[in-house]
Image 1 (cartoon, rainbow, N blue to C red):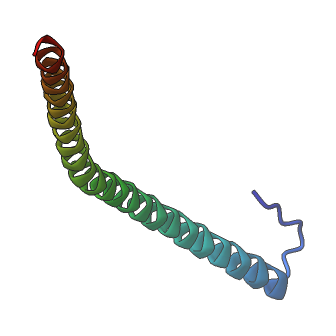
Image 2: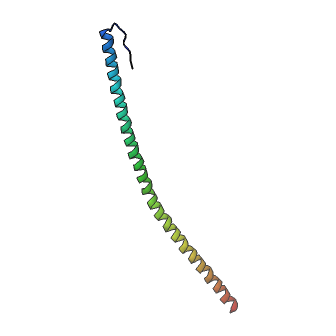
Image 3: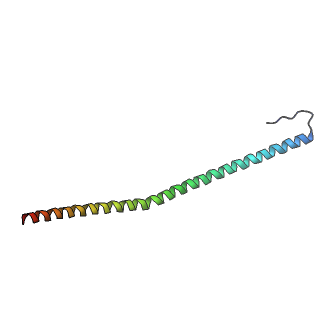
Length: 94
């Protein structure tokens, strides 16, 4: 809000009007840029979620593969140990 005193001087009135018009334009521009930034931030956040999901999927598959591989190796180790034990028992009884 701005006040003008009497007597009104034309140059001062025009300067104040121009100042308020420019201030209004700048506020609109700032508001518009703020909205653009909010949209870009939302897009970036969505992209980040997409990338995170894309990275998790292969890692989860690799993790599952390693778990299966570990289980197979444990079974083979148990079978190998059982075979060695059986061979030792057989050798002892001969």
